[in-house]
Length: 179
Figure (cartoon, rainbow, N blue to C red):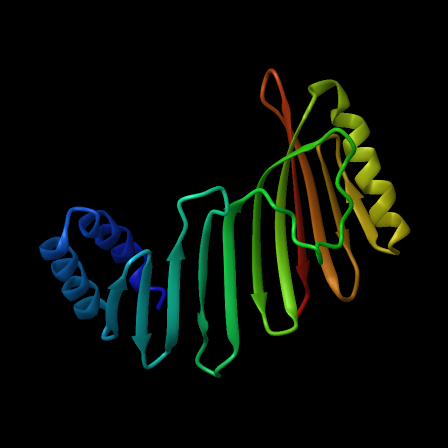
């Protein structure tokens, strides 16, 4: 399945050109992956001996969803590019921050997240302090610098990084279960 991703981008570009290009793109990916590829509207369906995947593309602010199963039959969902923070995202959102990007990776009972906020550059140190205090309150071991907090527990690793971009600063929060 990993071999299909670079070729998938080519296929999507070709598929946008029409039915003949779509058929050619399917043949190219199938020859590279050994799997069966089918384009149905805004979805690309990949079936291989390693598992099945459906890649769905939306034309709104919800971003891209990739869903499927792995070799053991475990359901996998990857969502990228939206701005809606999942209800089960465990971290608070810094007051005054605007969510600009959300990604999540769900596999069975395990979920990893990345949430990006845009904040006023004057609030950068307050945001970093806010997250450091919150992560410490969760009982996590903390390593920090002027722009980053790395927090670890037996169960999870979280990284919060604040980066200046002139007229705004960006806060990127990740939450990844260990194991």
